Length: 72
Image (cartoon, rainbow, N blue to C red; front, side, top):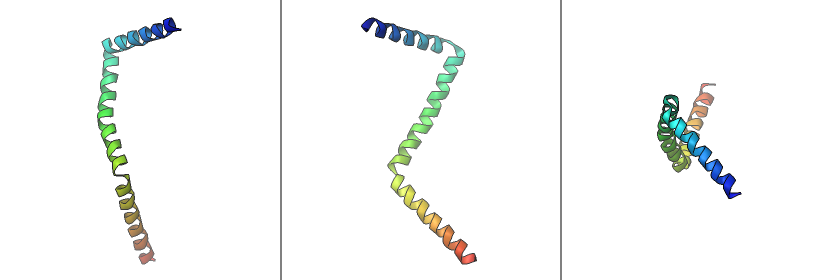
């Protein structure tokens, strides 16, 4: 069992090394890191302020509905 785990770890390491050495692999990793650097903070902000964002969206939606009802 331990031998199989070690073999899998070595295979993953080798794959990572090949991916890192290749230009396409390095470019792909760079793109993922850039996307992660943008998406993760945005996701954290959205989760942190979810109640405030929800209240703001509800207020805006009710304002739009009241304007639509006034136009009829």
